Length: 188
Image (tube, one colour):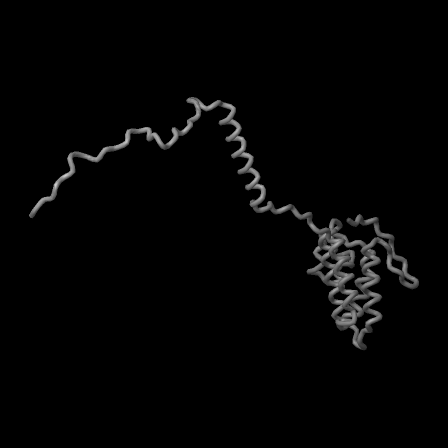
């Protein structure tokens, strides 16, 4: 193989720094402490702001629903549906609502007892006595639930109204009956 003429030595290089490129400006040695502190503070504030924007909000504690308020709301809802349900179903639901309210307010095991067990003095211990102002409403819902001739919607509506009246702390209007006035029950 034939070799061609070779270049005489290595190529000529331009010495550094290159004469055509300006020299980069560098900060003086030792960055001031206040600049480092300001950058750190800026980074921390940015991170905190991002955390506040994208964090999941903590579950807020929901105050427990008072049994009285829950019962009143349920009775108002039932009153709005009085034309959709049968009267015996309405009386059953009023019974369930009042029994759950009695359980929540007075710790009486009303949902698991019959009306006779609730209002017969021999069967109830003194600490779980059901206030007597529930008794006329209990008699009415029992009468409507177990009526053989069929209950009317008007009677069911009167039952709901008397239950709401009892829960609001007013004795139900009943001809010739004396019912004790219940203590004031706070509503929230």
